[in-house]
Image 1 (cartoon, helix red, strand yellow):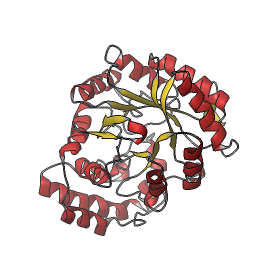
Image 2: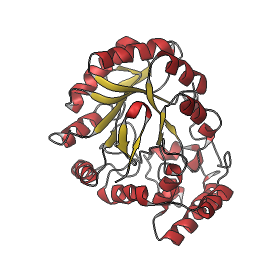
Image 3: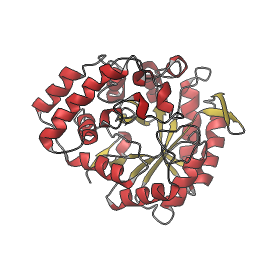
Image 4: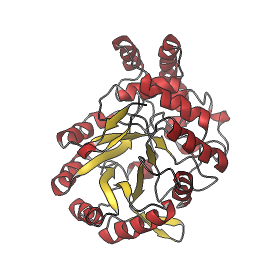
Length: 331
């Protein structure tokens, strides 16, 4: 496994693992429900392969995903970088809004530490920006947790360029997590530059377009009725066929190298800069092992040109979220 550094010297494996799919049922479902034993075996196998970076969040489940990861890393904690997130308010297990207050950061941190069974969270994200709380106040509260040894590094998710710059003036921000992939490139306009101006690493989530770029789905009819992606505008009957052209271009490059489409999509991200560490979601050893293999793959200029021609920035059909989801990003 190769390794990279995010901001402020945080070293992680070049490919991380997004643990969100590793829940049985819960509030977000891609495909069939996860087999919890297989999820645990997937985490153990990833560690064996040199993966050190594991991503979860309070909201996944909610709560149960952190518990699963915590159980899986028991006795294997040394050398791992465990990332989790806060930023929502709950009534029981129901999400009722965002909350970026220092008080919520503290309460969420305490809960995450308990569920994960660890003493320190290595990377603690604000999951979504709360427009009602100045970002300086939020990151100030997060830094109090760093001073107390409960958190090593702080980070943001889905923040806009102005918020990133303000946060970086107030506190050392180690990473920004936002969606970035061959079919979602809007962060290239300003956000990636704002991160690099301030020494902030970038962690792309959904680097495989929720499975689409891996060629996992060729028709909406293949999605289970309760699959979250049925609400994804890019998976709609209107946009799906046009977006398949992107997958076909990825397939052309994959065939040339004798690798999977997923590896090409991840290698494309790695080629965008040494400060980029994608976290493909997985719940099975086979798909995890395939994704991790992308760390050893280097794309040529011709490969990148083929992908660029098929998927220029802004060339994907449909927005990445519905109207409500889009109101919560780039703030």
